[in-house]
Image (cartoon, rainbow, N blue to C red):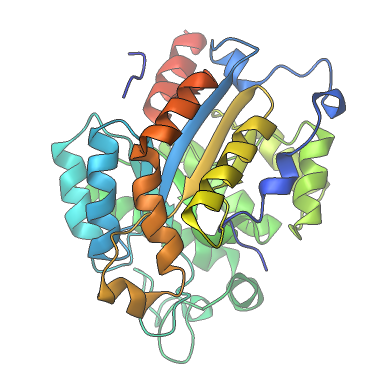
Length: 326
């Protein structure tokens, strides 16, 4: 099948990590796009919707985006009360790429959730209200790697028990890269389940430098963990930038696309339909509402066609990877 259709991985904080001239990249580096059989001089992109399952507005925004091939992938937050309905939708649409947005934080003031393992069995993951911590540093300070691994496994198992084997896994707010011990558990579980994780190739020193500048605790141990990880990796990673107007947001997105080197890039965003309920959940409601519509914008579609961007998803990545292993 060829596809046709503070630590945080939130909006735009990683953008500068990858705005690097080609001359800075290792001349001997073979991108993951090349390893998977894509042309070496092309930008291969996954447009990926995060925070699905967080609320009905997120769920309803992503369905037409996937069905109309305006985006390629999405990931569900299993601890949230609206996760079940989008998992059921994924079961009835197996051709769509739906993964899990492994969730170890509950960041909003009023719209919150606890872990699937529960506060009694994993007290280090939960605050005084029995909810997952608001921030990544709080998780790093209080939780053990064993608690993190148990919660990650619980979220994967819940999806499988419901009838959907995740097409990939990634990390809400970047928590699983908040400590080397968390990363080790994340990569080990991904390899065990043979489900690809959102992992960036760290063999390019400039990529490592970019993440270190963002505050990530990347050391030799983490670099070696990523090196030994046996499943496919990304070459680059970025977020759709925030902006004060929709027009500026689109222009910043175009700048991001122009800045990318050839290779495999995942670009995340957080779409939601605009309702009064969304406004009560998050002050990022305007950015999320714009992101629910920008990839069906004819001007954005035309721009991506002009740039000759190749789109893929994790289903195709794994199919190409397995074919290469034979």
